[in-house]
Image (cartoon, rainbow, N blue to C red):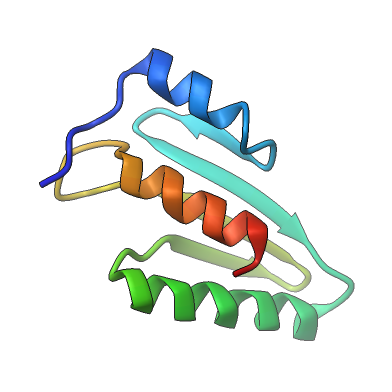
Length: 93
């Protein structure tokens, strides 16, 4: 199991992730697209990454808006694994 990050570590690392904001023991980001189809293409890419990493964000889709939440349930909070997944998602890998 991974070590949870403290508030200072989270704040420092989120400086490199402008789309993501701390929200308690998780981080969240909102993405807006031209239409539902484009939002679903993004969600499917995120799903592929999540399967590769075996680390799955909570995903909420509202027409052209996608809300993602990352946390490490097994560790009871935010870990480096969440930060790394957020970087992958934001880079669109």
